[in-house]
Image (cartoon, rainbow, N blue to C red; front, side, top):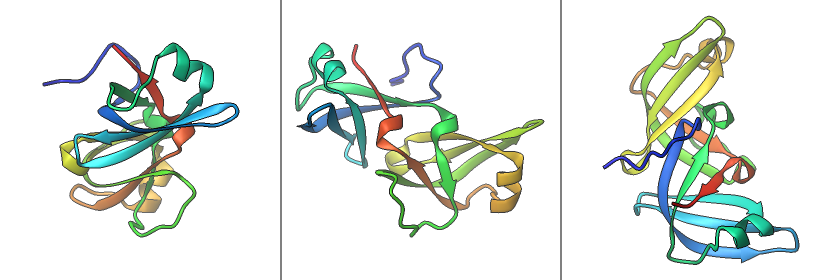
Length: 144
């Protein structure tokens, strides 16, 4: 079953809210993606209130492919809150950028757009294990 909704964001992950932490300005939303991985988002308190977010609610997490950073060092220590291990499924080189599609945890598909220079520097190829990094502030939460 496809969880995709109409959006230009290439990455759309269905998940259940397992934690909500409200701060002075922002709310941290932590999702369970079908038991295979966790994903954190930082959204404004106003957005959290208008979406009526509650623990246990099913939501969509969206992130643009250009916001997904790739690393071939799968044990990399980084400040990016979301670190999803995956294997390169396909690489499509364009004139300036390349689209890299990963098989992520639990069969989720992760799409990243990187420069051809980065593609060459990382020497990415199908079947290679990589780390997808997504800042929590680059995750958009949507409800149906």
